[in-house]
Length: 623
Image (cartoon, rainbow, N blue to C red; front, side, top):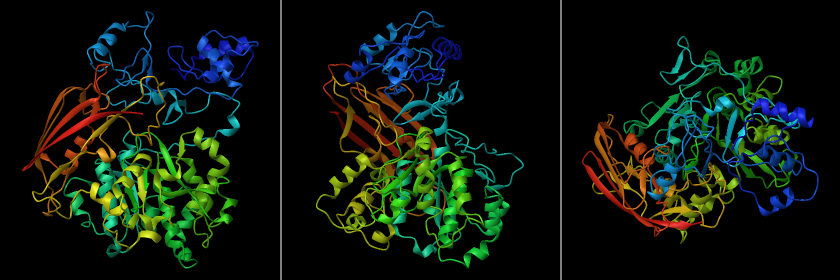
């Protein structure tokens, strides 16, 4: 697989063919095509041949509008990752490696890359401890389209492309810290690193007394699926001690208060127009009933532009974490108001929602929308959603192709908002199949969004979808649910999903899809708290012992697995740290054809006085 073209080959191709466009091509090392594509390739007619046969296929299919999907699991000679489905070997590569050891790895049921060098960073894999980051080659990783170029290598689509990222300053030692050691006026310690997805933002402008149990459940669900999340609250009403039951257990929550003067002092604006809009804060607050909403919309755009990360309202109950740490996304919903068709995305009346979204810093989209909505000359005090739903949708409508080409995922409604506001009451009502409903939702949705109009200050009935989800994903930080205090939760049965033997390898949606072998979502393994507040940070002795009978177990997605893993985490371990370690657990099934499809995992966790074990049956499920 090689979406990057050697400049010499491109120049030779363009000189020989007198064509200015070099279409995307596939590497000759491994590719699969459908029968329909074969019919197109073999249709009688003239053919243009280039120096390389892999470029030929790209040229021939270009006229049909067919582009290859570059699967990261098809790997070049100088990299090796254990989930590969094909790898290039050859005598011309130095240092030379033989494919024979890999054959023996398969026979001996070892990880495929055992014995092979893994110093180089493979495209779209984590690069920690590796050399040669794939971003340096202009590559972008899309969970559906595979590996693509950050900027298209053709001139044909230049009119559809535009500069989507602004170069922003990084942290310097002379800047004022907003949150010491984490957030400065211009950036955060995560923003320019691969850990940018750890940064989470939310805004709370209600009184502290308005905090509801569902907000606590939403926050707990986030930390269950993402124990290393760093959550920054933008709020003038929450006290520093409000989240002590989280922070004492090691979960990272920070609160930033704000005012007109502080926003101006920290340069939370994108140009002179937005700066002037901030300076006239008092004037705008007297002109319309939506100012508090507009200020929230404005701050959301500024933090996403300057720092990046994931923004979420505290109405989002997480069912599982996004499947990768790369994709940038925003959710969508469907309007039932025909008047919205004038600005909605399509004839289905689709619109973008800003309740949950994730982006890297510097996206020019946020700057453009802020300028169009929040300057003295553009501000409309009576437009409720010009800085949110309508503003984002109106911006994206004429630019949708360009945004999606440059890495913006517009997620389908069911991914983040499986229930509309009118349907939201059903989440709170008793049903005879709440468990089945939760499992069904977890298959297709990342979170369950609780619309204010349908669920605010309304209790969830026992046996409802929300009560069942809250029972499954709770840290028990405020109430004891187990007689012995802390306890470990895990799946009763773990299903490892494998493709049918005769099926072709399929491109997996790494954002919305569930990666086989990971204990995520309903399969999460985590320690629940004891419900006791002690008034100070809690540290305990912690040990983890994992073992399987047939396959392998791994605590690092890029590392080889083993039959047994024992981890002594030390004597100063908090709840967040032990749950982070458990969240990395991955099961690797046997590669032998004689495997019956059944295995068993044993998990033993010691955390302070807690010593508990899980015995988890593992079953293969063909998809």
